[in-house]
Image 1: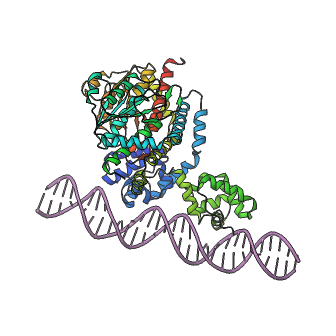
Image 2: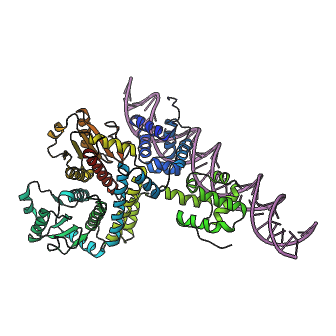
Image 3: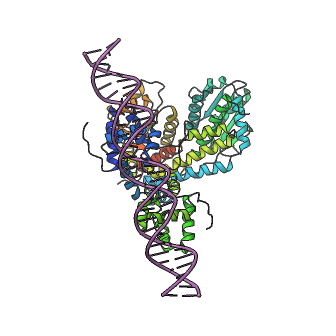
Length: 274
Length: 274
DNA sequence: GCCGCAGTGGAATTTTTATTCCAAACCCGT
DNA sequence: ACGGGTTTGGAATAAAAATTCCACTGCGGC
């Protein structure tokens, strides 16, 4: 055993964790990973809680502390508790400080986007129409296949939907407009499509959604206004308003809606909750 | 004795402290004052420590807790600890509970994801390291070209970055792993790369990031833990912890970070010459 | 296939911490 | 100054948490 000396600061500790995590037994590595991912929990958790979080026995976590050079968990925890006392204003003041820390500084900018995201989420919670959501989920879960289209700024939403649907084993096709022509012929009656577009609306997305309608597929629209050009294509509109800051939409709310949609459809298909 | 009920939140508790502190015995008033002045210490201190800070006996502090409506110090402390840990405890069980209770209506599901997103954003505000952010922005704005790689769940982040950079006229290349082999030879010395991956980490992303490093490009990592496999590739880690709900990461915080990054780099490039 | 040893889980033990209890001190009105 | 109730300090007890210990497991070398 190499008689290492206890780290003197949280930073030093985390450095050491990363150092040693390579050559550590399985359980101890689990501890290292969990600690690296949740350093803030140490101050307020017991060994038992940390051990459970890491998926190991308390005794294993104890050994882990000792490998790091501490006499035990308590000593390590003291380190976290001491540093905690200094810096923790609550979220509101922290955000304020970030914002004040310099008008054009990156941190201030980030604070704005975080705030924009938060507003969008709150607004979504207020404005979502549960009936439209229900109908959308029913429509999608009855489809043979789900087509997804969203271009430009909406493409990241589309790609996330595709990823999540795949993970839930729902047959999905992501239309990415690379080979423009052929993709629309893959849409058949009995399928469904999710079309995503925000102002200024991308014509290709609207066109493809209309083609889907003509092919006999149901269309679910995710858009930002009831006056969206997707309105004539489908009555099934899920509207999301995002706060934007300097021409950049936050997408937080849209993605939350997207993931909720996917999970609901996934569970509906595999375990109908009627 | 008025049989008061325990406060349900830290705010409520502090309100009550101010309420009652007027007509309280001397020692108990000392407790009230100390608590009002140092509310953040409760989470990480023992009764003995709090009592010493307030200049009273532990038993006096106990009585004080009970006057507030708690069963004892532990119950009060739990309130503070839970608030600190942001109760993003495992959403997996909550999802399970939701599903079992049959109350798994889509709207309820959406509410959960909205909540997860909100927590992620707040946490990002608290934990972001402004220095790392500054360095990342400097690195990216000095690059000839910005390469972006992120696969699977991180792909939507990558595609959003690509979209936003393009909109800001920053030369960008999105590596999407379609034509696996050739894309890495486009990376040259003087370029920079943004690599995004979350647990369980996608090996291809790590590999490509490493290839970029070997080619002489600087790498900025967006990941979820300091123990990320990108750690050996670059010291420049931006860590974002997302609350996940039933295996689905919210991405709200990650996207906010992404857009802040892009805008900061964009303005830096065309902005004020030093 | 057997031996040896690092690694592991879980129970036993020790230490720390919370909580209760009660006798003494204190305050206030008379 | 006296008596009643309230408040206080500190010791005693109970609960919870940390830490150690040891038997067992599984893996790698011979």
